[in-house]
Every structure is written in C-alpha cells, then in structure tokens.
Image (tube, rainbow, N blue to C red):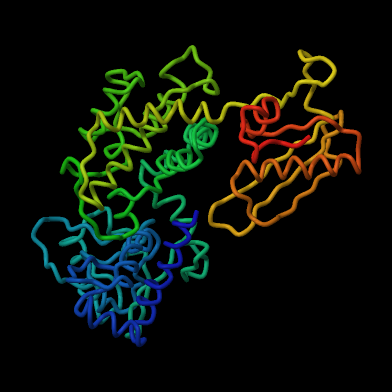
Length: 447
C-alpha cells in the first residue's frame, strides 16, 4: 500500500529528529515548532509548513513502537513520555490525581545508590507500573537518555518495520474493513458494471477511499473545510456526499432505482454498493442490469463538485432526468451491430454473408487539405486477405470521398480478386447507386 509505505518513510524522518537532536534540521525545526518540548509531543503550532505537517502525521505510528530508554532520567518526563516497557510504550500512571506535572524519571532514582527509590515509586506511581519500572536497568554514568524501537532486534527504526506497523497496528476499524473478502469482491465487481469506464473508476474510488472528501483529505494531512458544500453539514465520508446529503437523497428518492428504508441508503458505502450491485432486484442477473444507478452516482458527484468549485446549484430532479436519459442512450449506442449484408446480383431477395466482401470507407473534413479512403477484403472465412488506404486532394463533400473510396476499391478488386460485393456505411452512396435518377448529374455514379 502506497499510503502506508509513505507513512513509514516519513516516520524515518521523525525518528532521526529524536535520535539526532543536534543536527541542523533538528535545530531548525525545534526552534520553530517544539522549542521547549519534544517532536513526539503534540504541540499547538500556527501556520505549520507542509513538511512539519507531514512529519507530525506519523507521530501516532512512531509512538506505537518507540520507547524512551532510561540512562540518567533527567530528560524524560514521568507522566508525558513513553518510557514504561510495554508494547506500545506509555507514560507512567499516577496513583492519585495530585502529582507533580513536570516530574522527571531522575526524581524516582536514588542518585547515591543508582537504583530505583521504592518509597517514591509507591507514593506516586500506580502499583501495576512499579514492577515494570524496577525491571529497567539504570546507568551509573550521566549519559543522555535515548530512544529505542520495539520492533527490531537492534532497537533502531527501519522503514520495513514501520511499514509493518502501519499495515497491522495503525489501521482503524473502518480501514480494516477494506481488507475483508466481501470488500474485495465489491471492488472487483465495480469494473464489471455495464457503464462507461469513467463511472466504473469513480465507483471503484468510492470503495477504496480515494475520492477527495473531507475524511480522506484529513487522512492525508490536507487542511480543508469540514463541511459539505451542498447542505452545510459535516462531510465525514463519501457516504454523506453520495447518499446522505439531502440533495443526494432527493435524487435517489425520485429515481427509478428502488430504495428500501432501513437497508438503502445506509450509513456504510459498502452496504449501499452491495445493495445496488446485487440486492435491489434479486431476480435480475447483474450482467443484465440496466438500472441507471452508475449515472446517478456520477451526476450526484459532479453536482457536489459544481457547488464546491463553481458555486452552481443543481436541481435534484434535473439530475435524475439527465441520468435516466443518458443510461438508455448509452446502452443503445453500445448494442452489437448486425453483420453487413448486401443484395446479390443473381437474385434480388438473396442475402450474402459477411465473408467474401470488400468493406470500404471515406473520410472528409472541411478544414483539411486532403481526404482519405480505405478498403479491406474479407474472404469466405471472414479473414482479412487484402487491404489498402490512400489520401487524395480534398473533394467537394463527404459523399464525393465515399464515391472515390468505392471507385478505388473496385479498381483494386479487378486487379487482385474476383470479389464483386462491396459494403459501406454511407446510406447516401447506397441510395445513389440504386436510384441514380434521384440525384443531380454531378453526383451520379458512372458505372
């Protein structure tokens, strides 16, 4: 996962800030963002740079495996820094609400004997933490306190171990659902929907959390307005943008897509897409489904973006009418075209097959200096035997180009084959050949 790998790389930078506090970059960032604190603590910062925002975003990841290693204890705060040897490490738990907020770990050590002061531990620290604290060795020298990483043997952070933590420990409950087999099935089916590929891609993005709603932008540490541009309510997920926003709900209620109170629309994008894919009409095979829901999703999303970026409000009824007119138009345009047929010269009612025919076409535009034409000869088995293409000075009209294409194809067939059947998609050319008297003399086809 690219997102988790990026977090692991950024955590490496935060690790270096903790390990090398006297480096130039650490001193610059400390002077700007954590002058009297630590990079691991949450600090209130005004107008942080993109670099610091990115590094701060991985603080949670690093805290899952980093631990303050006690030497002298002068630099470690008892109630704030992660130094208790657990996984993940944490600060000590006080025994009572009354405590010294700035107490250092060195205050818990008998400096003469260089051992833990049990009386002070029992006075301030929770009894459950005392055995863990006493298990920690104390340095007899005044070495500075350091950090160690719990997920490697040598105690140093690596990108590989950080990536493992990001994949297995950092994900919240919603992100873990994406790894379930049912979600994988939803993602795979998104590409099988009979709809334009741009709509398949949008639905796949909805299921994988890749669309730019507030929740996904915040996860990438991008500052943005937390409110829906259409209704003004907090926009926490794609479910709100597509299904729960009042204008979006009006679209679904006025559409022909069947709704089911308590089932659809639901608060989960996965539940909603599962319903649209397979449950809304259980008697219908998904491959035969011509419901306009992909178009509705597409135009609801476009309406949301029109309001956000252009300040344009789209009427829900207008969205429904447009989506439900585009759906059948797309299916009609994508119906399989029947094989090209042509009347035989032997008997007027006899129809020949697609094989043993020369298909031709011409191209023409008013701005170009040249026109073009091409032909392909298919044998009785439907395989291509010969083909040709050429350009020539632009003719007076597109029909002239079609006539030129037919003339040139006939010349080639006389030279290379006995084929006498020709096919074209130009209706005017066919009519002109069958009824030459209905056309002006300058457009007549000379046989």
